[in-house]
Length: 134
Image (cartoon, rainbow, N blue to C red):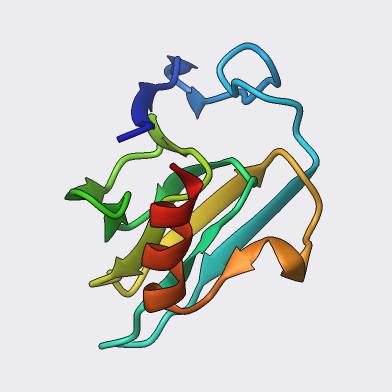
Protein backbone atom coordinates (compact mmCIF):
# COMPACT_ATOMS: atom_id res chain seq x y z
CA UNK A 1 0.00 0.00 0.00
CA UNK A 2 1.39 3.37 -1.03
CA UNK A 3 1.28 5.30 2.24
CA UNK A 4 4.04 6.19 4.67
CA UNK A 5 4.44 7.32 8.24
CA UNK A 6 6.91 10.20 8.22
CA UNK A 7 8.69 11.41 11.34
CA UNK A 8 8.90 15.19 11.53
CA UNK A 9 11.89 16.99 12.99
CA UNK A 10 11.04 18.65 16.29
CA UNK A 11 13.06 21.76 17.05
CA UNK A 12 12.83 22.81 20.65
CA UNK A 13 14.36 24.13 23.79
CA UNK A 14 13.18 25.22 27.24
CA UNK A 15 10.58 27.51 25.59
CA UNK A 16 8.78 24.72 23.73
CA UNK A 17 8.77 22.92 20.41
CA UNK A 18 8.29 23.78 16.75
CA UNK A 19 7.78 21.67 13.62
CA UNK A 20 8.16 23.17 10.15
CA UNK A 21 6.48 21.69 7.07
CA UNK A 22 8.25 22.41 3.79
CA UNK A 23 7.27 21.28 0.31
CA UNK A 24 9.66 18.83 -1.35
CA UNK A 25 11.52 18.45 1.96
CA UNK A 26 9.41 16.75 4.63
CA UNK A 27 6.25 17.14 2.51
CA UNK A 28 7.01 15.21 -0.70
CA UNK A 29 4.93 17.41 -3.01
CA UNK A 30 4.05 21.01 -3.84
CA UNK A 31 1.63 22.33 -1.20
CA UNK A 32 -1.58 23.75 -2.66
CA UNK A 33 -4.07 23.48 0.20
CA UNK A 34 -4.09 23.12 3.99
CA UNK A 35 -7.15 22.49 6.11
CA UNK A 36 -7.89 21.13 9.54
CA UNK A 37 -10.61 19.02 11.12
CA UNK A 38 -11.65 19.66 14.72
CA UNK A 39 -14.58 19.44 17.14
CA UNK A 40 -15.58 16.03 15.77
CA UNK A 41 -18.40 14.50 17.79
CA UNK A 42 -18.45 11.03 19.37
CA UNK A 43 -19.23 8.08 17.08
CA UNK A 44 -18.58 10.13 13.93
CA UNK A 45 -16.46 8.88 11.04
CA UNK A 46 -14.73 11.40 8.78
CA UNK A 47 -13.20 10.85 5.38
CA UNK A 48 -15.10 7.85 4.00
CA UNK A 49 -13.81 8.50 0.49
CA UNK A 50 -10.83 8.13 -1.83
CA UNK A 51 -9.21 10.46 -4.33
CA UNK A 52 -8.34 9.65 -7.93
CA UNK A 53 -5.18 11.77 -7.96
CA UNK A 54 -4.93 13.90 -4.79
CA UNK A 55 -2.09 13.21 -2.36
CA UNK A 56 -2.45 14.17 1.30
CA UNK A 57 -0.24 14.47 4.36
CA UNK A 58 -2.15 14.25 7.65
CA UNK A 59 -0.97 15.13 11.16
CA UNK A 60 -2.75 14.95 14.52
CA UNK A 61 -1.66 18.37 15.74
CA UNK A 62 -3.54 17.74 18.98
CA UNK A 63 -5.28 14.72 20.46
CA UNK A 64 -5.72 11.45 18.62
CA UNK A 65 -7.82 9.40 16.25
CA UNK A 66 -7.61 6.19 14.26
CA UNK A 67 -6.91 6.35 10.54
CA UNK A 68 -7.97 3.36 8.44
CA UNK A 69 -6.47 3.03 4.96
CA UNK A 70 -7.69 0.61 2.28
CA UNK A 71 -6.20 0.12 -1.18
CA UNK A 72 -8.89 -2.34 -2.26
CA UNK A 73 -6.74 -5.35 -1.35
CA UNK A 74 -5.56 -4.71 2.19
CA UNK A 75 -6.53 -2.48 5.08
CA UNK A 76 -4.38 -1.01 7.80
CA UNK A 77 -5.12 1.05 10.89
CA UNK A 78 -2.83 3.74 12.21
CA UNK A 79 -3.22 5.60 15.48
CA UNK A 80 -2.51 9.29 14.90
CA UNK A 81 -1.54 10.69 18.28
CA UNK A 82 1.59 12.79 17.91
CA UNK A 83 2.29 16.09 16.16
CA UNK A 84 5.81 14.81 15.43
CA UNK A 85 4.56 12.18 12.94
CA UNK A 86 2.55 12.65 9.78
CA UNK A 87 1.06 10.15 7.42
CA UNK A 88 1.36 10.41 3.65
CA UNK A 89 -1.76 9.15 1.88
CA UNK A 90 -1.28 8.54 -1.81
CA UNK A 91 -4.09 8.64 -4.37
CA UNK A 92 -6.61 5.80 -4.79
CA UNK A 93 -6.61 4.94 -1.09
CA UNK A 94 -9.92 4.78 0.79
CA UNK A 95 -9.57 6.58 4.12
CA UNK A 96 -11.67 6.81 7.25
CA UNK A 97 -10.90 8.57 10.51
CA UNK A 98 -12.74 7.74 13.74
CA UNK A 99 -12.44 7.40 17.51
CA UNK A 100 -11.52 11.08 17.81
CA UNK A 101 -10.39 12.31 21.21
CA UNK A 102 -12.29 15.38 22.44
CA UNK A 103 -9.25 17.58 21.70
CA UNK A 104 -8.30 16.11 18.31
CA UNK A 105 -7.20 18.53 15.60
CA UNK A 106 -6.15 16.94 12.30
CA UNK A 107 -4.22 19.07 9.85
CA UNK A 108 -4.28 17.96 6.22
CA UNK A 109 -1.83 19.23 3.61
CA UNK A 110 -2.63 18.48 -0.05
CA UNK A 111 -0.92 18.68 -3.42
CA UNK A 112 -3.91 20.23 -5.19
CA UNK A 113 -6.91 22.46 -4.68
CA UNK A 114 -10.37 21.14 -3.81
CA UNK A 115 -11.94 19.36 -6.79
CA UNK A 116 -15.19 17.45 -6.27
CA UNK A 117 -14.53 15.45 -9.47
CA UNK A 118 -11.47 13.89 -7.84
CA UNK A 119 -13.53 12.26 -5.06
CA UNK A 120 -14.78 8.69 -4.98
CA UNK A 121 -17.47 8.79 -2.30
CA UNK A 122 -18.94 5.29 -2.60
CA UNK A 123 -16.93 2.29 -1.40
CA UNK A 124 -18.42 0.06 -4.12
CA UNK A 125 -17.41 2.61 -6.77
CA UNK A 126 -13.94 2.73 -5.20
CA UNK A 127 -13.54 -1.06 -5.53
CA UNK A 128 -14.78 -0.87 -9.12
CA UNK A 129 -12.33 1.98 -9.86
CA UNK A 130 -9.40 0.04 -8.32
CA UNK A 131 -10.24 -3.07 -10.36
CA UNK A 132 -10.58 -1.17 -13.66
CA UNK A 133 -7.35 0.78 -13.09
CA UNK A 134 -5.24 -2.37 -13.57
